[in-house]
Length: 211
Ligand code: DX5
Image (tube, rainbow, N blue to C red):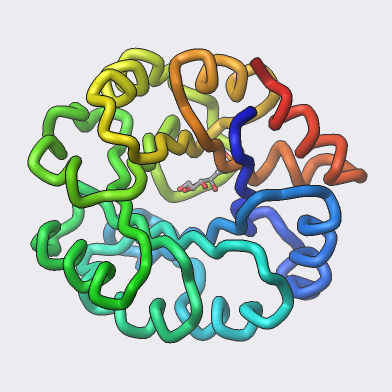
């Protein structure tokens, strides 16, 4: 079974603490925070302070997905906010190896996110230093977009047999989760599919058992 994370992008922001409690009760495995700076992607969301305010609401792992130009600026505050894994984009301006080192220095897990058009070979020199590859199945910036088949990329990454998690993010529903898991993904992140269900546990169950 794949591990399922919920991106809070489609949650009701006016009751985020309650939403996180509902997600936990529904059996979600981790919470994904899509941090956007309005420059790396044409959207603006939230920062470390929001994550900090939610940290004591649940014991679930927090994943921060940094869709920002300069990820190095935020690592310290994300570590203090209590995130468990930080994914930075291979396409961002930061020096990837230095940012990975600073995440590890904060005793957190480090991952690299790659956009649909970025070849997986481009992160080859980091594969021994990371805990996750976040394979984007949509162009980053917004929820509710159409899934782009990333099977070839997932199979390539799985074939490296480096032991890192392969998480697919974007356009995930019960059909695309099946495709991602079938190609070798170990985790998926969903927003609109989960939050479009009245009963989150039904959505989580369908995603977890997708194979
Ligand atoms: C896109 C985000 C994704 C997105 C997922 O930039 O990284 O997590 O919110 O939303 P859905 O599941 O609706 O595609």
